[in-house]
Image: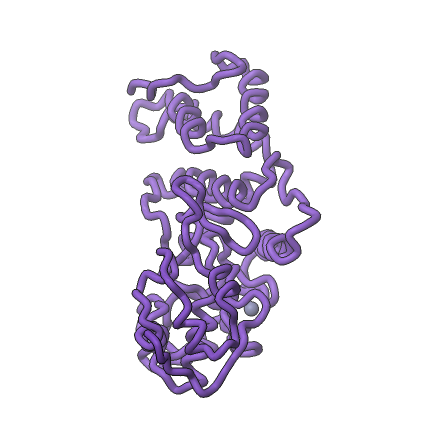
Length: 320
Ligand SMILES: [Zn+2]
Ligand SMILES: [Zn+2]
């Protein structure tokens, strides 16, 4: 488009603000009807956040408030197959980011009126600034929040998101979220959040979610198949995951013992320890995870588990 319209009221993105949250805020101050309306003005497809496209017209309607470079830094385009997506300075897997269903902290919305990018991470279920769980649905009409809503601070039913209930989150979850955001913003001086040899955000996200879902499904006696469940289920998974990583490597020993017990019970629907180890080996591939796998091998050695130290997995899935 050669002559792009320009929005009258300009706004610059705040530190740590999510791109869609920023666009919805810009839409609000310009009395537009939400992100889809801005995308139409900028000739952009709905998939602009996740699929590479030309953002020039978007930069142009925003009137120079954000440069083309800054825009490209904030989208979630896949770097290359298998490479994941860039999230602030880190690289995470696409499953680690919520693209469609945002989560918000009602207190942050009230005080600062912005949606933070870190809330897009699947493992972030609380706000460390206020200590509350994030909210992903409207308590008035029950619908899940979307980025297609018309107003930043309102559900389309008219209820105020700032007035949603504020439920305190556990201390460990709040502390973890604070550490995560600090590391994302600072990008240097990595502090290991757990006694576990994982050095990247992507690796930590994956381990928390995987072990958390494994432990949460033990409690529910059924696997959690959905990759991006509602925030309360996510919170349960993340809490179990954090607990597991905090007590690492003892937790892996406990998990294996539980599986052993289940194995001796013919009624049990649980997977066997062999299955568990196979799945761990399949899930945690790559250099980032080798030190973690070494820990597991040590535990297997201590438990006198009948596997070779260097390969606790078989190349083919175990039978039964
Ligand atoms: Zn908050
Ligand atoms: Zn509503």
